[in-house]
Image 1: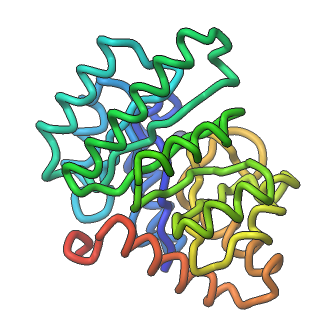
Image 2: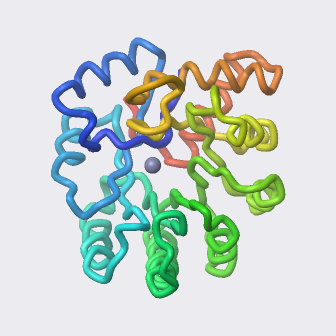
Image 3: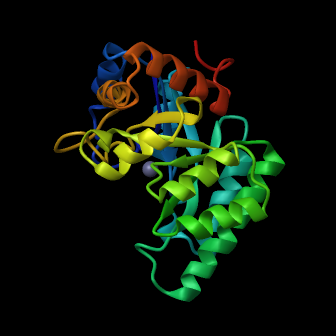
Amino acid sequence: MLIDSHCHLDAKWFKNDIPQVIENAKQNGIEAIITSSISPNVQKVKNIINRYSHYVFWALGLHPPGVNSQSVKATVRLIEKHKAEIVAIGEVGLDYYWVKEEKRRKEQQEAFKGFIDLAKKLDKPLVVHARDAQNDTIKILEEEDAEIVLMHCFSGTKLEAERIIKNNWLISVPTSVVKREVHRKMAKTVPLSQMLLETDAPYLAPGRGRNEPANIKISAKKIAEIKAVSFEKVAEITTANARKFYRLDERIQ
Ligand SMILES: [Zn+2]
């Protein structure tokens, strides 16, 4: 069995076909999906996790480019309110690709520190987004003593990946590993014992068009090839890692 440890089923590219998407995932051996909502607008994700409880699980965060004082306050309130339902805080982090202005980058850093503290206070794992800001992201996580960390779709340097591994954090490899060299290299560097699989659906498809959780099977095959181990081994270890990180054992039925 496989787990899609990070996607966005509430994105607008998923409309009325969520039942079909879930069915495809089940047909392809996906035993659980973690969907991450990244704005304070959570009605759609709530509908999905209510309908597919024990199969789709909720990580609640805020996309770094969407950080402002209002969105941060609203997200913190939502996290407090739904702390029993959510399996993680995230994705949260830093994005210097979309945000160039120094003042807004500082604002992201402050918000990120707040989310790290909140994750520690509520004892929740943290799912981290770092785009063109890998070094600052790792530095803040280290300074704030973050412990249970998943670097989602990490595409930094080998040195940065090794620092993450040394800190005992996890890295999730996206389905685009089948076509992008940066992720292939990451899959080589990260030991299976610290690796999770993600689609980041609807983004980062292995082929063209919209991505979906069923495609985890494709990336698991590719990673097996890269690591020269069996598909079953990749599935077994990454699934166990995801179950442990998100504490799914008591939630999956
Ligand atoms: Zn994402």
